[in-house]
Every structure is written in structure tokens, then in C-alpha cells.
Length: 368
Image (cartoon, rainbow, N blue to C red; front, top):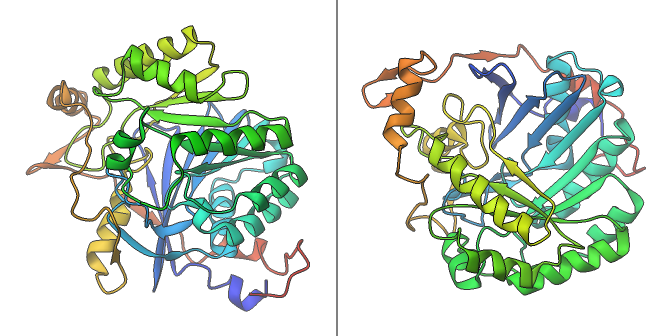
């Protein structure tokens, strides 16, 4: 990577801090692309730092609960992917070498396996910079070759793999994820089983619980598909894509906790993902409020995805308004008209982090 190119990775970087001091969002823009990344600390950056970053600008897969599911611009380059965690760490003054547990997750926006060439290079760069950082790929499972991922996962022992399953039948999943050229649930299980056999590490399946996929039958179908001796489970809540609706509510958490119990009864090692910052900065998976604005303001670049125009999936309706009003009453949110007011953004002057990329080329490849 040459210096002149790395200095132009992004034209503008904005930071949006949540009222929850544990989470911040970063929005990167340039003439022909937008990306978002989210930074979490648990409870300090030194103890555990989690970064969710984008691999594409928009997304062609069209998931109906995702704010990026209606439009696709283009895939990001390896440099654009790497620049996101570098920018976050640099801005907060975080020394990766002093972080006890660092996780860099490719799950903010875009389908990683539809941009695997750039992602492969980015992961190798990041592994060279932060050898102990976990690098988690979260994929909807497009029908592509996974051979290169298998090879990289053997060479880079910190790569993890998660599939966004979200439903227990292919029929229901097709409505939620309308992208046609994708693996069936049985095919996802096979890919994960083979990845486990090659790496010795357990893949995850991610299941977004709502009121129509939380039954004993759903849990039984998942058990028949995914061997608990091979697979771990992530239980997620639906992070509301519409910023006029409060995302975090007690009903969401109840659904996730109850379904976690069903999977634990069947022998799964499970975790529940209920991210901070959902209601004031859109810090949860698939919210992408600022990306949605960018798409509206750049219609000449934002091509319609396969999901565009299809029914959207929202958070469970029960307690939706009361959760928002609780936040307003507690001073965590203000409203103007019908739309919650976002926290103020701050610009990062210039791009001070890009110097970290200058001349860095661990792969021995020619500058792009």
C-alpha cells in the first residue's frame, strides 16, 4: 500500500457517542462509498475491546431487518476494511498490545463472503498488527467456495466463523433473507462441520429470536441440524432499523433469554447478544441509521438490492412504545416531532490514522 493512496482512504470520519459510555459509532464516507464501524468496551478498553466493521458499502443480500438491506454500492477494498479498526483504536488512544481481549468482527455492514478476496488480505494485515486479536467472520452463507476461508483459518488461528441462520426452516429463512444464491441450512451445517474438522475450533450459528421462531419445535430443528459437539449458538435480538422506534425492550430480552434456555437444554453452549447503543446511535447489528441517510442522499450510487421493496422486519411490537417513553422520561432520549433526536456527531480532523497504514504490506503484494 503506498502512502498517497492510504492518505485518501476516507474523505470524512464522524464519531457518534452513545449515552451509554461503553459504545461509540464511527461513520466513514468518501465520494463513492460509506461504511460504519462500532466500538465497544467491556468494561474498559484494556479489559476487552470489541470492534464491528464493514466489508461492503450497503449489502446485496437484502435481509429484511437490516438497515443496509435495501441498497448496495460496492465492496470495500482491503485498505478500507483495515482502516476502520485502526481509526477506532487510534482515536481512542488504545494500544492493541495492552488489550487483554480484542475482538474484530466483520459484521457491521456487508456480506464478508461476497468480498472474500479483500477480506482475506485485510485479516492477514490485522493479524500481523494484532496477533492475539480474534477475527470473527459473520456470514449469511452465500453459495460460494469456502476453500480459501478454510486455508486462511488454518494459517491464522484467531479467525472465527459464524453463520447468520436466524430461522429453523429454509422456507422462513428465505423470507427473511431473500438473496437466492445462498446455502440451505443443511449446507451451512456441512460447511461449519468441515471448518471445525480442519481447524479444531467451533463455529457459531446466530439466531435472531422473534415471536414466530421461538418454539420447542424451532429448538428441535436447530438441534437436528447443528451438532452441539461442533457448534456454539449466538442468540440475538432484532436491532430496530427504524430510528423512530425504540429497539431495546423487555420483550426482546425475554424472548432471547427463554430461547437460550431451550438451546442450553439441548446441550448448546450459548451466548446472548443484546448490544448497547441501540436506541440513541443505532449501535446494534443492522440498524445503520447514518448509512440509510447516505443512501437516500446518494441515489445515483445506491443500487437497489434484492430485498428492496419487500416487507421489513421490526422489533416485537409489545412494549415498543413504552420502552421509548421510559427512555424519554429517564432523559436518555429526546424527541423532535416523531423522530428521536440523535446525539451530536463530531468530525475527526483529517485522517491521522492513515499513517499507520503507510508502507505496511505484510503480504508482499503490489500496492493496489
